[in-house]
Image (cartoon, rainbow, N blue to C red; front, side, top):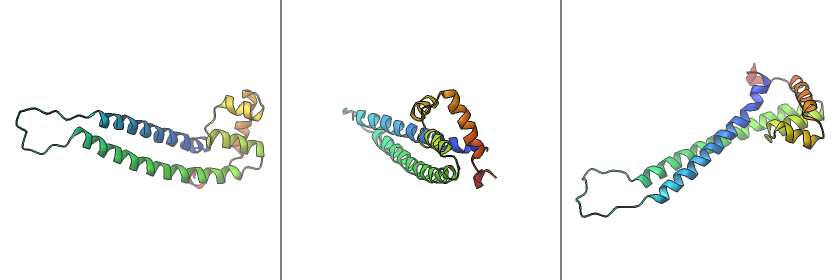
Length: 138
């Protein structure tokens, strides 16, 4: 894994967290749609779980996964901040923070920093070259 791939991990983990949050919203919607059907027919004596109970179980599992992912994301970002702060050039630090910690697009970074996107890409290359590889990459 190179430095760029290492720094991109936070964005991917953030995307997975957001995806799981969307799944929870969908499961919540499904759980609230569940209705019971009342008929005069006899019931099956074998115990079955309801759709609502299944949805609630899945929601709880996803919430636990999200909490673990958030813990990993916080730890990863803490390491990334330490690595970025070790870069001597403050412009490079700012670019790396905006891209890999704030997840901004190149265009947003260019506007925020007052550069063209071409200059941002050149500065990004310089910034990556000045990053000391984290221990996890060795």
